[in-house]
Image (tube, rainbow, N blue to C red; front, top):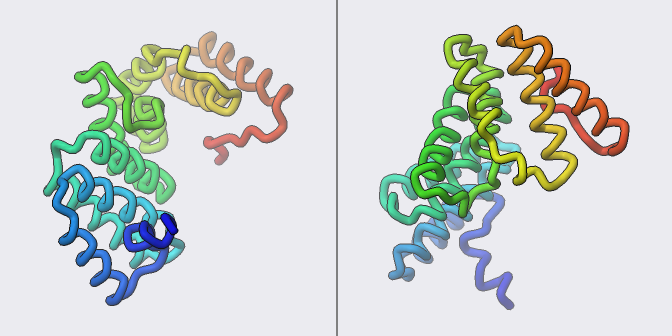
Amino acid sequence: MRAAKDAWYKNRAWNGKIDSNFEDGLKRTRNNASKAEYLQVQGCYLLNSPQAKIREVGINLLSRLFSDHPSEYVSVLTAQEKLGDHYLAQKDYLHAAACFKIVTDHCSKQNSRTGTSNMADLKWAEAILKSNQSGEMEAAYQLVMQYPKALLKLNDSKFYYAELAAHICQRLDRKEEADSFAAAAAALLNTTNHLVSRFKK
């Protein structure tokens, strides 16, 4: 019952009829926090589409969220990070970095990571690394070094952190640190089979 009730803002496809139903649903919603949530959820669903045109609809819905409901921080931060993930997957590293920076800056000001994966600052560092912004590499290093490692609960996040740190240190010619982080990543690979590198050439 609930799945059918929620279906109007959880579409994985998009056409004129779906668009009309979604807009009607938004018009019926008087609460701004709920409107923001619906834009965020629907936009993020569409970002997962294999079709570029549908992903573009998702981006446009999230842009509406940012412009119309900027004070609904939880929905905005969730959407900004998801959009950053999308741009990172599309190898649009500059846009990805901009999204992750917004999330990281807000979390820093509020001293809270609510609404995020807890890793936006690491993803920002990854985007800097992959965009080959040599002038920003020290900033990426600081993002990684200042990251609260107590948040790394699972082996896949620990592996991601160690591998990311190793690559950034290598780029900055910090050989000893790079070797240490690379060794930590290798040790995790030896104990956990399903780990996947995000830095394969």
